Image (cartoon, rainbow, N blue to C red; front, top):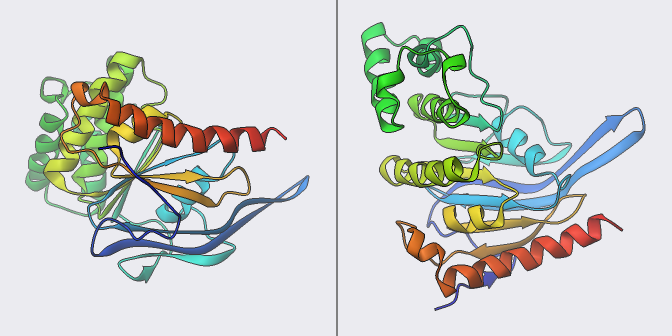
Length: 272
């Protein structure tokens, strides 16, 4: 059965909304004047849902993520988590960027423990929690290594473990695998889905890679060219786990074409 495309007003796939974005507009004031990054952007994300966001460069994907992270404020409209307005950063939201943002003077274990230390958890508890997630991302033998001793993929595993360790309600990921080679990227995609299925976190994942979006997501949100709006939401009607065999299937390729057609149309508009 081929996957189905939906209009932007389709409800989320969960019966309960975790994240609600309503009529968000974001204007940046620059030396060259006003730049409208987001315009009347609305989307709901369900509890434990995995949503990927795609769209042409400059369409406001990262701006939307920063608003959900509490790093930016909307010019108008609102973003809520569990019905409460977002007002600044919070440990309830874990963020993973393309650049690993690890502390070079801290070991893997110390990096993963960092957020737990801010929460003032006892040392023994911090160590146990960090150990769990370090093992989950396959870095048990590197717990005492420093970032300079790790490959790019290993550094990103540390960043993911650190984000999960604080038990966030929402995991925000901004092209976390964008700088990695294809083999490492594929491996981390599989590991991320495995963690998501075990931990059941709500995930908001930005990517430029349409195939990655279809592989990971329950729904793919396609953003319009700037100013960013939600153009279309496409349901990814594929069972988990998402195997390599599934990745080669006609159903997968049909969905990938659906998403790509929408993204490519917006890319052409962005060039006009």
